[in-house]
Length: 199
Image (cartoon, rainbow, N blue to C red; front, side):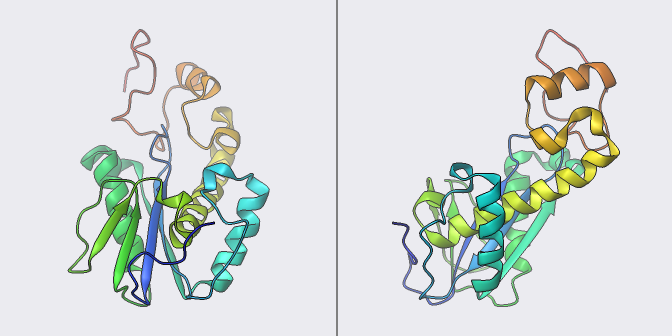
């Protein structure tokens, strides 16, 4: 059973990101503040759930949350500051967008930079332990997937609708065949070492 609160503060915000390991598209973060009485047996780490369940939970979370927000950090910025910094920036941006300032922040993973002077705690596998982080993982993943579906229309040959920009064999084959797009992260190794790409 996932726990509702870590810090004891009423306005505790959970934050998580999606798309860190992708070759294309943004890294997307969400922040969620849930009410103290929130319960949901289905809510879990988004990676453990089917797309159908994630979309169902997206609606549940967006309705029930006291506050929620989502922020993308795009390829150009990722290439500029690296993916770890971009992931943290996306989480900071998502917290910025919350209408209420949280009293405490719980973060999935083990890397974060202080946000203003709000206390925070990083929690490894936090999306499988705390409801607000799980909720943030659902929003980050579903919003990012919807964005990837949209840009898939522009470049259907990479099949982002299916692979969401992750380095699948099919995605790498398409990069080899068609080259890179404006949505690809140029600082990432887009092809295995032996296949050089002119960027």
